[in-house]
Length: 298
Ligand code: UTP
Image 1 (cartoon, helix red, strand yellow):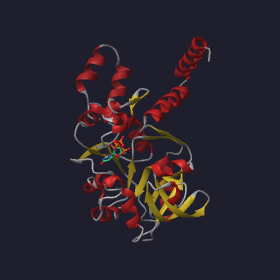
Image 2 (tube, rainbow, N blue to C red):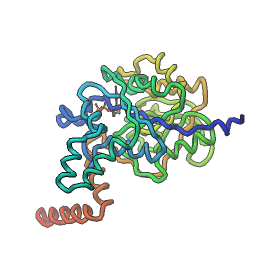
Image 3 (spheres, rainbow, N blue to C red):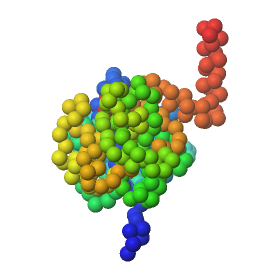
Image 4 (tube, rainbow, N blue to C red):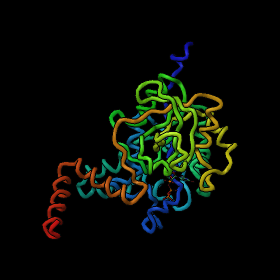
């Protein structure tokens, strides 16, 4: 059988959700960051919607302490939906029911948030033999086809792990994993090296890794050999750098818009962008801005 005939699209999406969300304290003292709502649904629901739209039928959450509400959110709520139906709110009941039907949900546990690399390793039992998608729910992606599907198109052509890139401003390189890469077609790169949160003067490029990955199962071997990296955490970027010694890794600049909901400023901007996309909410936002200007003479 030829290699092309053996190609299998990914079916599993991994979501690490065990982090502390310190940049959102005190809001995240008792509510997981991933459960913060963007308009009418939590951040994590936006991510799962993208995974499903990309063809994934299995979702693995790497949860941790205090993240029980994420599991509850994706479980059936028979009492709530029965009550809604009793009260004639069948449409709302259907909307609630549709959540647990989105995919097959699985859970892995990260006892301590030791870093993204460590979180991904916790999901090994669910994807040890197959390529899988890794989605960081903080990055809400507005893209058609989905960002994950854009990565899949590169894997189908080149056969290897694929990273999602955005060109960032020079002053921002120290916030991201940055790649050293050779462009092999417009917007598609073969990765030569990676470095996590480099100093501006030491960064090999301005190509920053965003929160979508397509990873080869060989990554687990490299995650197991990881030593603590930047910030004292087990860094996924270091494991990908090590994977590069074994097999090629590709990257692509996604086409679309990224809403960085991991920081307050980004979350506010994302709420406004999502509201502007909705016809009814757009009017409310624009009126609020006009009223504010009138009241403050701005
Ligand atoms: P972040 O670093 O953006 O999230 O990780 P954080 O650590 O929760 O937030 P801050 O930096 O303290 O404000 C990206 C994703 O990876 C998960 C987080 O839950 C988030 O969804 N993560 C991070 C883990 O699951 N485990 C970890 O050890 C670290």
